[in-house]
Image (spheres, rainbow, N blue to C red):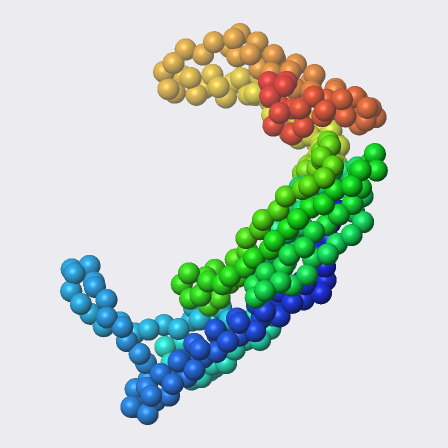
Length: 326
């Protein structure tokens, strides 16, 4: 299967265009903020305010908190204040700022990658998995345009051409995704010549991505299941110790001493004690506990039987107890 790959020189051109325009847009804010903050200091003020409505619809002034700007494409230096003996940023009092070049580079690279991926998806949607790409003539056109064609042959040696135009523009300020400048791209494409037969390259890529995600999800599930099984394997030993105590506790209830204690309580509280029913009920509980204890001892030497139980969904301590009614 031949995939179309966007030419690296055109990708570099896109990135440089985005990077330069993004820096210029951010620099406008840098100049604005630095001028505004310097004026504040010259006037002897330590913070800015803005007007807003309170809950009673009254116009009040509120101090501006500048922390959110530190999460964008600006690198800001704040005045310091003493907080319990430690000097920290006073986010109400920014000092000066500059363009965060590293953040701008990363943002430009992300925008470029997004545009390139969309272009590759568009061309690969016109390619069949049996097609072979021979020529790529994509080049820069006038202004914000990349155009040309991708040609090749089918499995039956028939020729085809995929014509493409990639056009872009920019959104600035609040209309942009990052608050400064983002590129948005549009495409026009069509295939001419030999018809596309069968599944497209893009569909094959999409299917492979989906399968990879399913495989990853299954691998995580299997890993969790293996960890759960490793824990469940220890239950026969752990639960045998617990159930031994339970059986001893039950046996103590219907011992001579235990029954005498219950009879005395019945006399003190003036109710009739059915001793035969109590003995029968507790004896049944002991038998149930003994059945589980015997199986627990057996499973300590029968991992296959324990795993079979685990695979049926009896995979926790509580489920095992519910199965035996203990």
